[in-house]
Image (cartoon, rainbow, N blue to C red; front, side, top):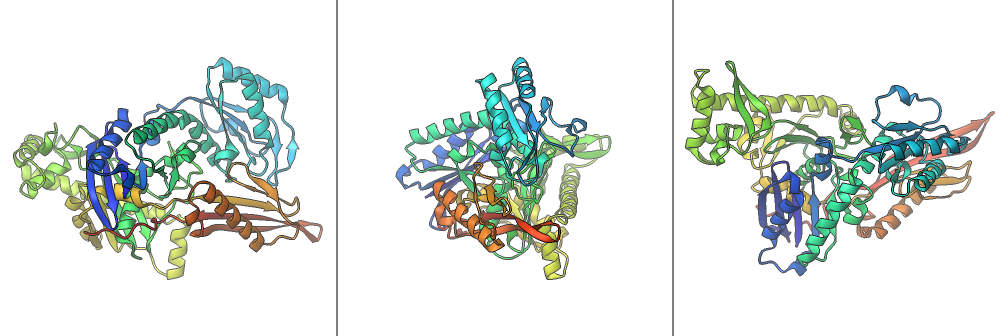
Length: 558
């Protein structure tokens, strides 16, 4: 049996899946201050009457990191940078406590300017005096040679023994310095909170007799073991939208192009499945307005949900962006889009009288009936969704996979289908699909599709390998792994090496059976020339276990 739990902004959902059938579902209100309580309530509801020994997999999608960053509750971090020449970071608005050191390593990993030991000691004194307990150390080309990062971290640790340090080459191997420092910074800022949360959840599972490993859903739609997540908490950012994409993917599993619309209580998430493949963001997840190195689906969240507050501003009706509580038909304090649907469908969702009263109160001074307010609310809701999808298509057009698809197929991408996710999907998605001249798809299990997507998501692993045949060395973006390579190595040799490392690391992480599901997402080769002769080659290869569903998933019986 498989368990999937998705922590949303309004509700925490869970499913218990076994051999093509969803045995149980659960839904509990999300208490943001106590996420573990919401998770365990759902888990206990799913496991009631179930032999815990039959549970073979538990996957959790959680908003913990997203909530920490959105609320500004992350830990304060001292950011220590070794940028080298060419980029004036002092003019950029980075993070509050940013310290810039002398020293440089070039793009081939050669030290071209040494560190200044006294300068590092001075920075350590400032960090200590200002009371920082977390630090991130990032060098511009540390993924090619992490010697400077290691030296700086060692001195900082000697001067401040209690300081917890994240090194840039440990969390990302991408050459984009700004994205890598953002990733390292937010990793340091959330690592302690995530570790506490992870220990509490792991302990709770053990007390309930669950012995299978806990997996965490990542922003790219794959999973990673809980122990691995302790080093990469930022990988869990936006796991909620990833769960909705994987839920839509699991419920359809065909080659159609679909817009995924996950309508929650507070927000709606939009994503694209392009010819059966979820579209990834080429620039990485955007955290607090800054691009990171975290691989993620191309998704957008908009402040519009089934529980968005309906108000009157003069003679105009407005929606949200806040949520005051549940819909009036469920005992909430204000009218919502859910109440509008409830009124126009004759009370199919909840208490009809409460919806009518709440909507009538909004329309009173505008001289509108409750029904007129309801229809206006639905039109505004659908119009915003339609407009946001149009904006997303403009953004999606910049993604390489999107452009390649259009070039290969010689036509524009148009949505063939709108897949509705969430409890409110049935109320809004058919009308939205009609506006977009597309098919509507709302599965009976759409209200818990996020949890299903988490339960059946395949483990993923992404590696970047850089090789320099002139120096006869290569390095990986994982754990600072380095090695030697022949002076006459070719692209096929480098790709074979990448496969070997992928398979070995996958085996170490307990996901070896999926190591043959790999794909290359980057293959670049550059010749180094001196005089009139080629003196060596630079290779960059990206390989990943592709996102998808696990072998045990056999579809879902409606």
